[in-house]
Image (cartoon, rainbow, N blue to C red):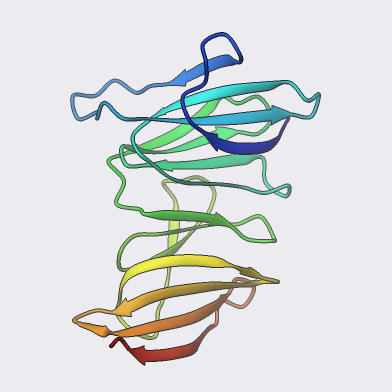
Length: 177
């Protein structure tokens, strides 16, 4: 089982066993992302993923890893590293895993919870129409999110999403100078 994941630059040939997660498409970019995986037996290996790195997420409470690049969103198994599913040309820009093991993704305007697989999501209703959403980290069960108000880009908004209750609290709204 995979116990750790780390983004790395191009590994030197032969240092790690390499698994290429390439999906055939005429839309593929020539950019690659490399992640180093560590199994519970401390074996290290690398995965190559098509597209520019955006983020990855995994949790000890979930048997999946979600990897997000500019070309694809990949769902792989933590048990054996096998590709479970993928979405091509994803609109998503960030992914994180909650303390209870749920995956949360965002595009520029919305926040979503992945249900059973990456193709099955539920949208979180936001109190303000937002743009340029950025995940800033977890404090217990609350995800801190920063964004700007849609069509009012001077208004920087900070909100907390309680993943257990799905409640959103507006922490701060401030005008950029």
